[in-house]
Length: 195
Image (cartoon, rainbow, N blue to C red):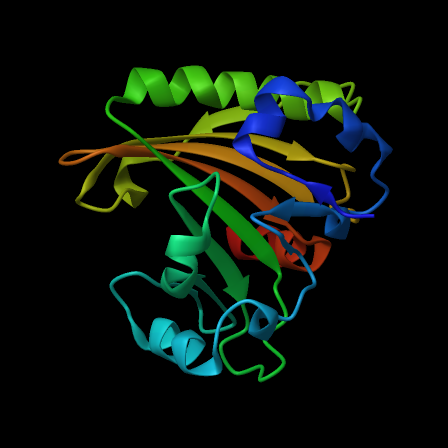
C-alpha cells in the first residue's frame, strides 16, 4: 500500500507514515520513487523538459531534475512537482521527487518547513534531529538570496533514502518550499558529488 505524502497529510495526519518500510511507499501527488514517469506524462513532454535548461537541473549529465508542466492542472496539493531521472535512460525511472509550494515571504516558508520537518521526524520515529544548514553564498544562483535545508536520512549509510525540506528565498517573486524524497541510489550519488 502506498502512502500519500502531501502537505495536508504532513501537517494533520502524518502518523500513518511510520508504518512504511521502503522509500518507494511514499508519494507526492500519486508519484513514487521507482515509478516509471511515462505512467504520468508523455514521452514528448519528458524530452521537452530534459532539453529545457531554464527549468531543468543537471547533475553532471548523470541525472536531471525536470518540472512536470504537463501535470500542473492535475495537482491537488502542490503548486508544482519535479522528478529526478537519468536523462539517457529510456525507462524514465524516477530516482527522486520534489513537491513545490509557493509562499509570499520567507518567514512563512520557514514556519511551514519546521512544521513539516517535525512531522517527518515524528512520524518516522527518527531519534535524531534533522540536519539544518544553509547553502554557501558562493554556491547560490544569482536569483536566490538564501536556501535553507533540513535533511533526514532514514539510515545514516543512506541505504534507505532520505527526505529533505528546503526553503528558497528568491530576490524577486514568491519564495518556495520543496519537500524532497530521494532514493538510496540518488542519495549516494549526491554524497559522492559532495566529496
